[in-house]
Length: 185
Image (cartoon, rainbow, N blue to C red; front, side, top):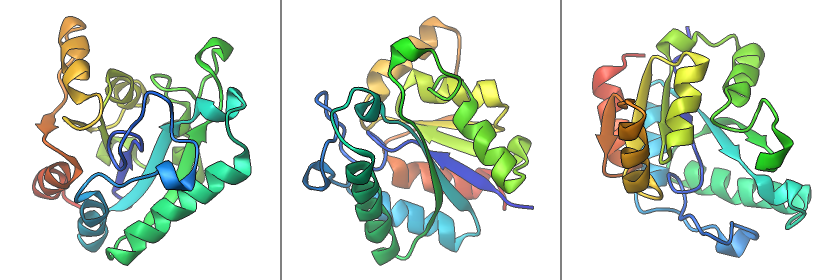
């Protein structure tokens, strides 16, 4: 039985930008995030990145550029001793009203179909209300909100909706430590 940790990208693994991440050079790891993924990998968890990437739908970058950014992320994680099992992304803009754009659960459900994941044993780490809502909409067992990226704003949004993540972590590394202690592979 696979234990999956779904992780959002921007604001969790890498620094976010209000202008989007549009090139390999703009992709910058948040300190300790590659090591966090390595820690999860070494403790028997599989990591799947799920991310909204409307930069494609907005025609700000090409699929080739997005693939190059993803490759930089995977290489950085591998150098730290970790592995990203797969990446699922939504290329659509919010106006397209698709089923894969978080908070809709499409990305997680696509991963579930591909890997026969037991969502009741999976966990999601994100920095936005949309991430946490996506996990809940998909039926993930645990949710962790990180304070990097949009975390502080997300805490307020979730509180207004009466939603509480299972844990609030300073960053992805602290989230990984909590997952290892509380979600046994």
